[in-house]
Image 1 (cartoon, rainbow, N blue to C red):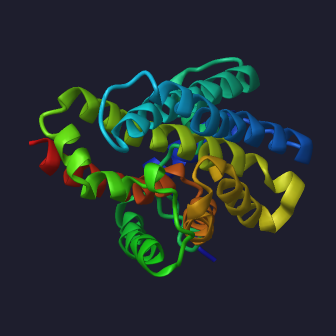
Image 2 (tube, one colour):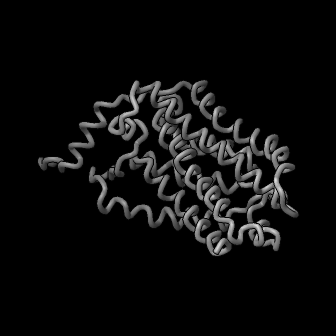
Image 3 (spheres, rainbow, N blue to C red):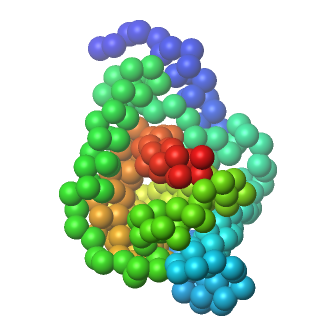
Length: 265
């Protein structure tokens, strides 16, 4: 029998968590939240972007990419706003102490030892490596040339567009930032903690499937996203921390941000 007292950090975490109730969603409510994120993104990417592209100057695929950057930025900002609306309605407040627990924005807790933070963060190393490996090894469908970011970066028109384009680089950075604070907060921070009542122990599997299906705006990435989704959802649930998914997902964004910066400079 372990007679040791919990650490101060653990005690504080337990006290804060016990004061915030996280209600469980029914399947209908879960899919409603999914639709509120996925359908606007699909509409912006497939309906709004082609119309907006005609209003942008540029050669080749540049106008379409300008339109996609703007449209997807709007869709991801909406997801961040959606999370704020959902948490505010549920908890009746947006105080940080409440939001932190409602969205699992707390240090990871070891399911074995109960330790909070510290060496538990080392789990990020194998998770990031596995996430990168999944991106490289899992085959995906061929993307339309006008919608494949690698095509833009590798083309002469794309390089000419990005050179010195600090304003567009800021929008691309916003796209990456809101991919994290939009997608991760919605799917791992809000939905995952509220899916256990509907899906039981398979809640993380259902969360991964929903996140994969959410990518209607880029359906060619779905095979790879399926594996990546499980790598985000399972450890988030196991360690009860949305920071796990945020950190792993951010590693990809940091790499691309630096890559694009070399072209802008």
